[in-house]
Image (cartoon, rainbow, N blue to C red):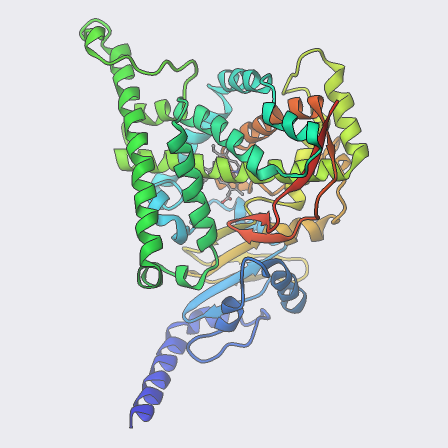
Length: 476
Ligand code: HEM
């Protein structure tokens, strides 16, 4: 009796699911995809996916179902894409800008990543302006100063020729720089540790079954959830302190006659305009949105730049001719000029092509998306579909898997690792400057040696390596 009732319920739910997705099914009838079971769809494809096997599974999947396919999970329609033609049409379209960042909602929920579409354009523009125009010279000065600081910790490894994990050494340096630029302060060690711990916590949750949605996370990992909330609170408490100081400072500037300065606790001296200043000056952001925006830039900047830097170091160590050419370019000038390093920039771009740190760019279709494609033909994807553009596979199949920075010298190849179109990364130029500011002095001071084990790729929000980014250095 019980079994019969379960069976009837299952049949009813499947029929209902089939009925509500009938329109979408018509749209994607031309696409190949894995077998769809009643109700659960191709759940088996997702359940088997782990951080460790992501790359093998995604390559096999693409080989079997092609560069554009469909995959149903319950009522949700996933469209994995690894095709340049289609990716460009979608990313450059003005009307398909919605993304989804379910996993990060507790931390970054009110930022531009998940905000309503009508707010997004203005918020994106504000960040783009901060990174690209008004402030560029000040930021460049800050990076240039940092670039001249010696790498004391690497000298220890250079003496012993010990193999080390580049992530352990370089990611704290990236975090320092990102926080200086965005928050305009030197953060406490506790803040930095909390930030790194929280990022690590999210990285571990990525692709975990319990993190499939908020309900399964709430039910399946109560202790992790509590720790996550505690870490977020700690970060936001310190952010609020900085915000208060920044507001006081702006108040002093605006009412320099009306307010007695000596009644206000001396704020930290900012020698450049930080992102938080720009956000605090804007009238249409409440505190919650402002902190979310700040956290988003800190998180993305830290994770994506650290990942790129570590992959670049490993690649340079493994290609002596590339390293030699970088060194010669750097030695040409007496002082490091971050704007004048075309070859080093090409090395970074080639690294980004082969190892895009934001591996997947997502779009949620809020209306039907009509496309024209030289191989697949003309068709449309339906409203509600979730498109996942796999930059890793896309950029490897379009060009080759061979590491060759030359392709980013004149005429430069196309790079999609920062996204494309209206929603592309607002900090693209700044990221390259930041990475050069760390790489340039390092390559001048040390020779990178390809010692240690090869990378064992995995995907934890950003691509990484299970055994770290191993290499060794010697003093020049
Ligand atoms: C190597 C470094 C970086 C790479 C490869 C990178 C890549 C990307 C990509 C692929 C996107 C998504 C674009 C899309 O959805 O079409 C993105 C968005 C974004 N990035 Fe970056 N990024 C990097 C560094 C940074 C840094 C340093 C910051 C800030 C300090 C930053 C802030 C953002 C923000 C705020 C967005 C969201 C834009 C929006 O949704 O409108 N990124 N980035």
